[in-house]
Image 1 (cartoon, protein in one colour):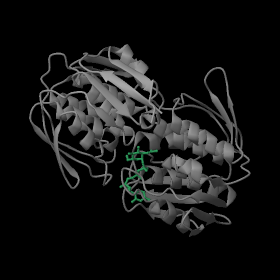
Image 2 (image 1 turned 45 degrees about the vertical axis):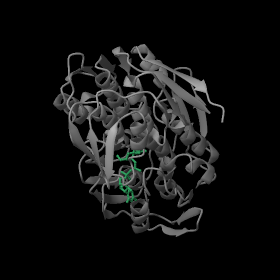
Image 3 (image 1 turned 30 degrees about the horizontal axis):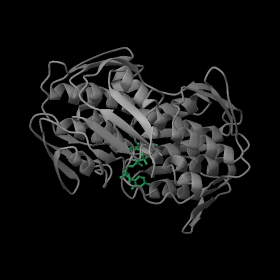
Length: 421
Ligand code: UD1
């Protein structure tokens, strides 16, 4: 076990580069199951969740080789055991992304129940309904879900609510189901578009990704391709907030500005200067006296739930009163109690947090409860007076590559130390 120690108060200045997006890398790795030849994937971030997905593929019989140029070659064309074991699924819910590809390619899959999770119940009923409509017979017990199908059929399916991994799972399955599948009320996240682009590069015929309705003309066989994973817009957004919260001036490189437009707009509304070019964005808050602003999370292109906790830390130290409403997950406020330990003035009612800006946060011993909550504590620690100690940081290692190195480069005082429990 390790903890992060931060001595707050430094204004951040300088440049940092984004890593590959975890939420793009995971479905692309799962999609290699659909291919008939080995794939070469680059720009995968060094993160625990990516390692877990590679372990999962390997446990099913895929071969994985790291080459010197940083690419990973994955041959998942001959899976021996179409099973996602509990020990792996319990550490990463996104393991369910192998379900659609397995049942479409091998006619069966055994997937551990993903269970609850600390940001809400997060059911997978849409994934299962879609696959069942495609013809899979589904049984489950307390531990596993069993899917069995001869050959899947194309479907016309309407998601009752927008789901990112739900869209990805059904899109992947339909890519090799002969005939035309239509998915409606789909997630429009850049990571969904990226997955469709990857599959199309492998020979799939997917039209409309990034819009509400996606049409998939299934192909019997997909061949591999070399692919570079998209950069991480949530990581970029987190460093943008790091610049703003410290009244600093940071430039974030290797990012598509159009994927973080809503984050830039919110920071401009709050009083920061935000500029962007081809593959960079710059946040200057050196002369700003930031004003807190209301936020309501929404599926893309709305304000991302994955940035809610980070803006909670920023609003906590900005002028005025704001409301943050969480509409995507029902229990994504576990950072609130920890931020309050650092002096934030936040009260909660149902899915709304009411935040009164304070002039100072102060260091405290706090605990990270999920990935983005951890990021908000790091951000609060950057401005907190004195020493902040963040426990349970394995969550942060699931989603932020080299966070101490990147923040240190920007001028923060942050380091990791072993924690004895
Ligand atoms: C993905 C992202 C996660 C992000 C979330 C929302 C990955 C690996 N993870 O998670 O970082 O926070 O999108 O942007 O890409 N739902 C159901 N039934 C289902 C599926 C979803 O009720 O079968 C509900 C969920 O409980 C939630 C909402 O739909 O309330 C959206 O969840 P979803 O988009 O599926 O989140 P994930 O894909 O798990």
